[in-house]
Image (cartoon, rainbow over all chains, first blue to last red; front, side, top):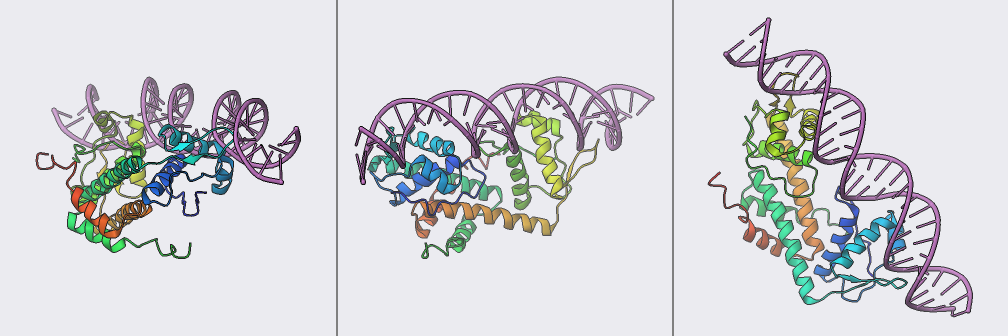
Length: 132
Length: 132
DNA sequence: TTGACTGTATTATACGACTAGTACAGTTGT
DNA sequence: ACAACTGTACTAGTCGTATAATACAGTCAA
């Protein structure tokens, strides 16, 4: 059963997209594997304190991307392959890097300074990982 | 007069926030200076192909943060100081770096690999800067 | 088989972002 | 003074996100 212990809602992006990203990044990291069971819509919505329909929207999109398999009555399961994971990794990385490099360059930050800053603050907000 | 030539709407974040960020990042980069005139609400909305009310919302927030000065009938002007710019830089940088490090760590990317990726793709989508 | 779970679907409500149109008061250059 | 600009304010509508409540059909274990 996939755990949502490290899920944090935080910023202003839609919740259903945050769930989508949480699953995709877990698949890329290898913490979510092919065949893994997902929590039910009702259970996960209660766990995250959000509406079941919001979870359903995220799961429907995962279904549309062929990343999970669902049939009425049974739990949904992950449906991953090496190819899909490689594609996910490339897509997510490209978007993240495009975003950060664009932002920093708009602020006049040099490449070397960007590397220094990211290297310096890499572990920030990451102190509690050994406890969880 | 502040130019919006390099403004790109792109992602799904609200337009008024993108305008806000464009101004703030320009101030941090030094391409937007204290006393610089802003385009009028009507002119800028026509330039960006959006609604005047959306521009007004962005400008009102800049006014709330004391980054611009407006009076009815006259053009709005930037109202910057070294202190404000330093604070802007710190706020924007912290949020950007928090975001990218969080995303990459969720994907299981190591600090060294992150640095390698960012260094590698730094100049992507940046080919036209010497022409502009 | 039965009951508790599952996925799926529907309708209604609320809010923010954005658009559209209009109006009024103040500044600026000629 | 005048015309053209400026900031500001307001109402009304659309769309996407999220919530709330309900319903129905299929799976699964006791």
